[in-house]
Length: 232
Image 1 (cartoon, rainbow, N blue to C red):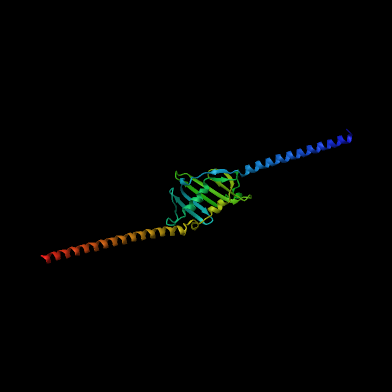
Image 2 (image 1 turned 120 degrees about the vertical axis):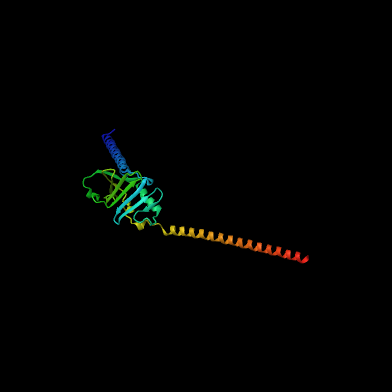
């Protein structure tokens, strides 16, 4: 074997090793980045509040303050007890707290103002049936498109879904029962009234028919008696 051939084979071997080394590094980097993404997107459970455990809620947002009461089945407005709340909308709203999840836990931070939590944008104060009070504070939007929030149960600041602020920044009229529900209730009442009226009419007709039959029978009996007397 000539020196030229040996040199060529050596160069080829070196190039092959270089390609394998680069491939190995790229694979490791891809796996590492993949693990990072999974860790970053894994949700953190911060709170779990069962809707059935809620007694009262005080919601402070850009529109003012709203207060609600819940008896395990029905939501009512403590500000206006006669106001008809959309029960499905209320339940869906507070189901967002069961569970309340976060994307990142930033730990305890001294400068709450930097996160909009020194004076929270939205405050949700919940009193449970057993008297326990839990408060959720929503702050500014974070740089990753989420929002900063914290709770009375921990000193940590978290980032979570920014839609949480959109959902809870509502006014009483946003939670009003839909007109269709009220119309359906009125229709049912009207239908029941119509059925009752029809039943009364049928009863009256039956009574009238019975009276006519009785009158006819009485007339026939009188006629027979008169004929009998005349015959005698």
